[in-house]
Structure formats: C-alpha cells, structure tokens
Length: 220
Image (cartoon, rainbow, N blue to C red; front, side, top):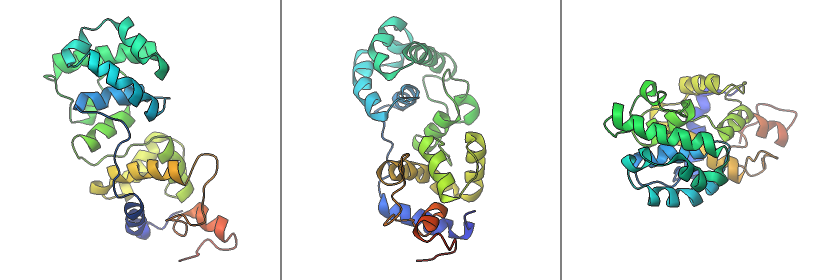
C-alpha cells in the first residue's frame, strides 16, 4: 500500500501537473451545478454541457424548473440517458429547494442527501466546489486511480471516501479529486495507464511495478 508519508509529495506533483482543478461541468448558479451533476450520472460531462444551456435558458429560475412540465424537461435532457428519472428528480429537487431550503442549495451532507437523485458523490461535489468544505468526490476516475496508486484497495465508493478522508488534508481533498479526474482522462486512462513519464510514476504502486517489476521501493 501507499506510504502515507508521501501524500504531500503526491499532492504537490498533481498540483504542478494540473494547476487549475476545475469541475468540467459548466454552471453559473449553485443549483445549476447540482442539476448538471444529476444529468452527468452515467453520461459524459461534455454531453451534459451541450444540454444545460437549453435547459437553463428555457427555465432560468428555480421557480420555473419546479413548475416545469416534466415531459418538456425530458425532451431537453433526453440525450443524457435515464432522462425520465433525471427529469423527475430535477423538478422535485427544485421544489424541495424552494419549500425546505429557501431556494438555497444546502451546505450539509445530511440535507443534500434529502434531495431527489443526490447521492454522496454529488453531495461532496457541492460541499467542495460551492462551499469549499472538505470533500471527497468518488467518481469512476477516483475509484480507478486511488486503487492503481495504492491509496485504497477496494471498489466500494463509501469505503474509498472514508479512507481518502483519513489520509488527505481536508483543505486539499476536493481539489485532489478533481485532479484525479484530469489525470485519469489525460494519462491514467481506463484502458491503460501511461506510466512512463507520468508525473507520479515513482510514487504510484502500479507505476513502480510497470517501470521496474523487480522493485516496489523504486524512488526517483
């Protein structure tokens, strides 16, 4: 497993490689990120970004979304997949934000999980990106890379979240997860990791084994 004493170096190398760890979903209002994240479930961020301008252009306020005909929302978000469930969740969540939270996206895990279609991944995204609170967003990239690096040895998202929380500084955890997404898209892809030349190759358990299979303690 990963030597936790090297966490600061791991973080620093990823910071140097990806200085702007921005969320790939486009949004202007807090609730727009919430709904974009719902649409992104089992869909690419790029696809969602082609859909949300129409959605938020036609329904520019929470009140408008809450009062929308679900079938019209379905037509707009159809290409994102699971459009019926996602449309229903968005309309119901907009109503709940208005009725229970004063039109404001809540800032606690407990309250966020009350919203239809919101799980821990989306809740953590909101806490980290909107409220700058310690957060661990466990998406497919985080699952893949945290296992390859050797930070965890499980595919269970809740276990990964808890284990990463235990070893990552709270003020770095949200951006660290965004950087894993960027690194997972650019270098450590699902098909095959590009270990030679990777910015964390000698820190990563998989990278060390690929570069020098005879040693798991190889250092730069």
